[in-house]
Image 1 (cartoon, rainbow, N blue to C red):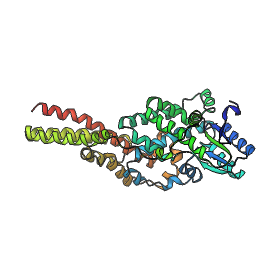
Image 2 (cartoon, one colour):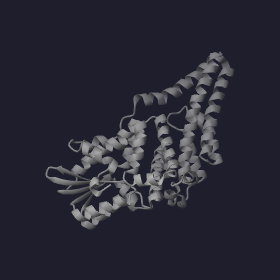
Image 3 (cartoon, one colour):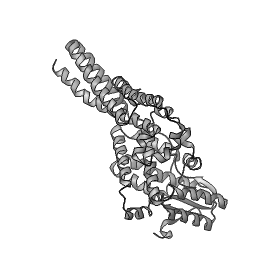
Image 4 (cartoon, helix red, strand yellow):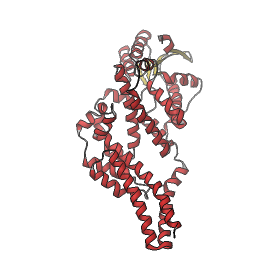
Length: 389
């Protein structure tokens, strides 16, 4: 593609905005960004970054500052694991192209500082974007998303030279999100459409008469679509309310299970009640333990999963993965090296299981998955016991 095909001129109240559509793993995009900024000498350079992502570029030691216990306690393991898988996809594509992921954004910041232009962060905080996505998704949708992301890791190794050349002309990460979004509209709405609106408004709010904006090529059509309309940024920065149905489901299932236990002991005596409890403990405990085992959890972690899952499944405030994740953390406490090598380890599927940090996240996710499956497996067994009374 020619440079002109990636440059878009926008006007607003007599101001000139040069919009550059880039591929996040393309050296050509990085070179184009530098040339445009050096040639046009803008007042402001907008970049598709938020403060935390800019810090991650400038602070290579950020992973060493992660509080993994806090991540587990705040039930953000699933969220962080998915974020790392997305980062892994982009890093592995970048390795194939021999370029640093997001190099064009790094170049934009450096060129802006060299030209004396103000750097304007135009993207929504990545933590808000991912949290809004997570809040809007049910457990099944989260599992489907995680499955699609894991599949994407394997597909990187199968890319042909033609695929690599094609990816140099587009925003790779947005291509992946587009594919995921086609199957899950809520993901597309928050990860792509909302950010298009946010980016458009932030670019319009940038100071200066001459602005250069550097964004992924996948966002260009959306930014142009929303350019003539105003967007309330505060509405896109808050958390959507939790669904009443989700709350009812969260508290309703344990209440129903407990009620069935009480009825079983009352109507069928100790034999029926004991059988129901046995099915519940076996299904929840064994499947949660298998989940921890799949994640290569420590023997104490597997044991804690087996013992805690039957109880945590009846308590909406505590998840089995929360318990097993903490046990794994203290049984195999991550060392400084694990945080230092995290960015390299996530480049391979094996690395997710061997790095102690990501293994903790996997333990949390797979233990919770096993416990959830155990609940649905045990329920019909309990009902069958009641039918025999």
